[in-house]
Length: 265
Length: 79
Image (tube, rainbow over all chains, first blue to last red):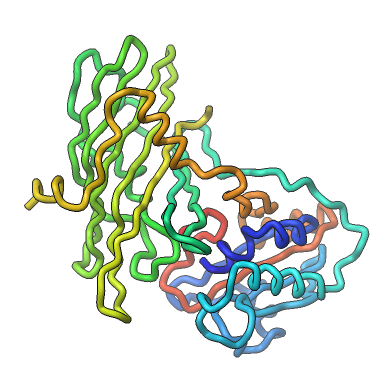
């Protein structure tokens, strides 16, 4: 999370990585390291100070340079500023003997996308640094558009019917929650707002199965526009994400928002 | 208990006029400058990156994480 928010999002690092194809592999539950990645770990040694390792490879996959994901020896990733992360990453990337005649690609924005569904931007708007970096998820719809068909009169919508969207409304980098919500509750109202528009609105509760993770209580408001066979949606989930700080045994309340937009445009 | 959560801890709904909802959506949607990580040229996997690197004659930058319960997705952000 800190690598993504502080390093990979920084303009200096984005510029340094223009020649590169960027990839990620994450180990889940002590699974074996893949055969094509294990040699990279073997070459870089066992102890590097953190569980994040970066590898610079040439166009044939040959290892040119590797470095620890966190700068310095301090095991606390929060100890370093965004600029310190970025400077460290740029210095390490530039140490690799990459061929100079590499074509630089344009750094155009390319967001995750789907053929027919929604895109969600989940964020903690009042947090800074890595915690403030938005998450972007996409969902290919199945029955959601049918569920939200134009209402001739106001009708209730069970929030569970939008579980595939709402379960993703959780923040990044919170070690206590590393997976989507497991339950969605709430009753929304779909109300006509003119001949071709409707408003979806109501309170929701998103929950996990274990008692250690408190539920998220929030609101979901969206504007739907109906045009022939196409539905356009613009909406927001908003609420306070409760996180228990185990180190200090206290609850923190972080404002969380999710902007939801239909795709394609 | 189910109804209690409606009063406790929820922020006011933006429901009402369409313009109010659109305003809330625009305020919540990040600006392009906040989405810099999506300016990187992401491959879907390391295998995909190697295939593209050989085809396009370009180097690879691979980030790996270990010792976590979930693999996560560094590009999308839930990690």
